[in-house]
Length: 313
Ligand code: SF4
Image (cartoon, helix red, strand yellow):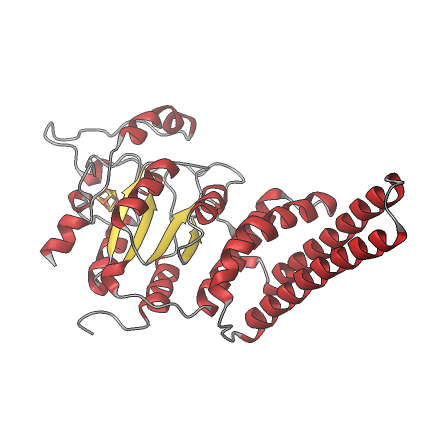
């Protein structure tokens, strides 16, 4: 377990320095030293939640039927666009013979029917929680074809961007579950954002997440405990670029990523070949400061990927 502790490293805390200004915005002051010695955890001042910046209840409330509905709306919109393109080229290009026109129309209909069949298969797998043998291979298609279509449908139906992203993450997670891909605990990596550490925490987690004394003021402590219990590696990263580097370096077989919906969406799309379970963080104080996460959800994701109970249980 000690080697695991060594492996559980954070990268840098320069972002925490960078967010100094944000702390002030959130109504927080720097840590106070009460006894003249090292700043202790009891000296961490509470910060006031920003009005209207509660937890991502939107994420929790997102229903599977909404996700599937958005998927189908995207495919239908795709069909309409294809038909529009075809009619423009057919009626615009005089040189096209009627045979060529019919042929291209057939091709357009074929592509549309394939997209419809694929989304139907996806919806069936998600609604019934059944496994599709090729479902993992659909993740790339979902990232690069369905997601832009979902964005388009979102614009068309005036669905907020955040809701489309949350639907995408939900779809991704359901696919990760339906693919039934398993990995050993040491092949699983948990990526945490730097903002999950209490901003007033006096401990620098630079290069070593084990510097956390697990005081209970933020979720780093419980997450470390969870990671040790299951024998998985957990790291804190200061941003998306380092997160991608970390994935390249550590080469995990499965990934659990915690971030805001925007970062999660781009991160999931960046590592399309890897099964990723995305957990949207809670932001009671606004973005990028004193965020939190549902530890139980992470435990469920660990169990989903490892397919086993806690080590030593
Ligand atoms: S749980 Fe760890 S990281 Fe969070 S405030 Fe306490 S010592 Fe700092």
